[in-house]
Length: 147
Image (cartoon, rainbow, N blue to C red; front, side, top):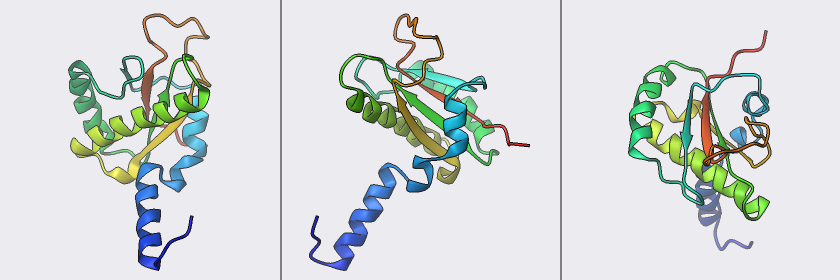
């Protein structure tokens, strides 16, 4: 991609960083949490192919936001079902995590502590026996600090 000016190039980098902050893209704590071993603080479920957060999840997220304000890091683990292209599912899972992130920011959680991560269809909390869309979700974790 060729940029006509340095200012335009900088603006493009900033807008790209707003989508997936590079520091968060490979966050080891959140990827460790995504692989299992820690219970989610909350889980938000989605309809097929959607990123819209249902009203009944908004009340739960408002309660989670109260605790999240006092955390050093909050992992938002986006997941998708196995329908469709794996790359599409990974992007969809990230968009779901970003939707939860945006709502938590609206509820007063500092943006810097919220880490959206997409695992697409890679990790399943239910061992592959999914029922009623349980795989289409964002799990919210407050990762434990390593000793």
